[in-house]
Length: 394
Image (cartoon, rainbow, N blue to C red; front, side, top):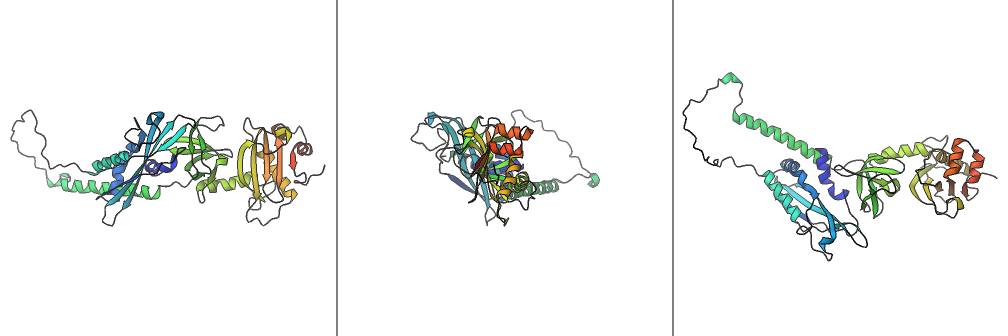
């Protein structure tokens, strides 16, 4: 049930498509029932808050582009409830409609809803809130019912049977408790605590953690996703409901106070803290990681793919770093950091006034780790820019 309401409340943040961001139309309606009762009714109609559309015609505001150029239309509704002083509930509904557009810049686009989906959902909510009128006489049967006179059974007072009025009161109490629980879910579980945010527009969300994987859609800057798992290069995210995807670690940032950020900070400090340095005294902290083209003219890696790790002096460390600090930190990084298939080298950038760059090819790195070349020979095969960055002498 938590996942049901999580999908409803977070739908608008979890699936932004590329290109034009359509203005959100919000349709509002007031119901006399309290928030708890409305929440229970929303749970019943939740499966209809998202899905595929048979066509865009009649659901979106007409645009200059012909609708027949779009494929795979889908919709996702966001529902928010607000308690009113009168005891009733104000319900706001907005629908996000996306479709794939073929053209010079193919991709998913967000189309402006004309309000039909929102109104239909509010109508279904009204039906779910309207009790069945049991006072109306039942429809007469086509077959005559024989008139049989028989005495009504009389149950002894000690039979243990609950009178109908008491049974109805007990059922109403259970319903109120369930509605209160659903209201708590909406209030306390509407926002997960392990979230990451996308840094830039047009960030690809991939089907699997590979550079050549299929792109599911392009996320926009500040889109937020729930983290399922992460490693130094990839983040596994929940898109919506059971939908999953992958983001490059370098394309996201941990939100302040999130569990993902708290869990990652000590892990990265332990992994890249430097030989012999505790997490409390580590002189450097990782500011970004990415896999991209080598940022320089060094022959062995020029124009090739490399894993690039940027670090800066740890905040609050109070230390002035020295070439020896940089050397010890570089040793810890080059000994531990793994390279994905197809990546040709490892680059460490010290982002400071007295910083610089240290880079190694995959071949030299593997030889050093296997022990086939000495540490001194390894550093001679590396790019040191400036040459004195690690305090090594030729």
